[in-house]
Amino acid sequence: MINGLARCGVCAIVGALLIPAAPHEASAQGCILFRENAPLFGPGLSGSYLQPGEWDVTASLRGSTADRHYSGDVYQAQRTALGTYVINKQRQLLFNVNHAFTPRFSAAMTVPIVVASWSIPSPIAPPGPRGTQHGKGLGDISAMGRFWLFDPLSHANHNVSFGAGLKVPTGTARDTDVFPDITGASPEQKAVDQSVQPGDGGWGGQFEVQGFSRIGRVFVFGSANYLANPRNMNDTPSILVGIGRPSTTTPKRNFNSVPDQYLVRTGAGVPIWKGLGASLAWRVEGVPRYDVVGMSEGFRRPGKEMFIEPGISYVSGRSTFQLNMPRAYYRYRAPDPYTGAAGDATFPDWVVLGTYSYRFGKVKHDAQMPVAAAHTEK
Image (cartoon, rainbow, N blue to C red; front, top):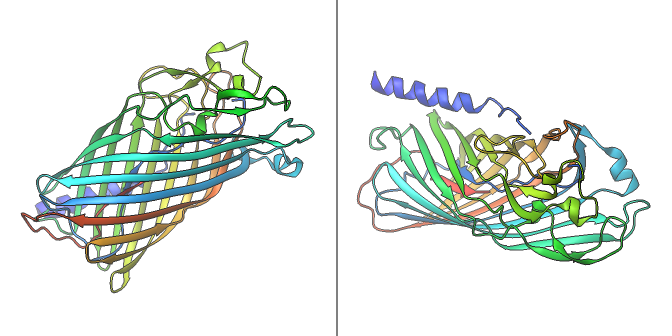
């Protein structure tokens, strides 16, 4: 009876994760800022719960190039035709260390390294040479504790975990580069665009729920992760100032906002052959129009993007290799939170996520489950 109720609870949570996250949230063009992490379940059946005393070390790479503009959910084809589009390249290397203290409780620390660029023709009309801004360096380090709701010893085929943690503003939010204004003149050292800053300048709270349930040879999984940034604005001049178009009617938009971020992911995986597995997931990530805690002033590009995410994994001994390639099918740039005017932002068609994980350490208990261990990705 208890196991039946537990399975129903898991299915209910996973089912809830199938519901798209509601959009909540400029006028300079650019890319939606998104670098939040979330658990990435692998479909191999040779994995297990992380045991007390064990460590899991993961290195993952996220790469994307955004050059297609959207206002609302409408593609701005004229930007491509005229050659006035922004090109936003994001590369992020993520190191994650996870340790299990008990069968139900584990803690993880995540260290990101960011290399990104943002470019636009200067002048924009007629299109001149591209003025490129580069941002790179250590990102915002985070730490999170996770707790399994049900005892892993008796719930090998389904479970739910909850997590909470802290994001520390270790990455600079005021990286600079030499680039011209929007007319192609006055090249000088200025703060780069918000989307390529390594950090956001604020302390944040991370909240997460994840779950899985096996149905025959197939298992379904889901996760939802939310980063709440209470700080209103940082002291970095926004791109409006950098390109020579500061706002006179809403001067607070001349400084960058410290926005919340969210990621929801759910799908199913199956084993294929000898440690090889495949998965297919639905994914949405974005920046809300308004934060859940604190003010939401300053410059931000709110919006969301939805993906269909195929993936493949291979488990060999203590190592796990995984490749996921989310393909976008829906983009939405939310209106300006001050004026309600339609905004403009670029979105990537593809995101490439590559992960390698290695598990080690003395095992004190054994609680096997038929799903590869959760890794962390961005």
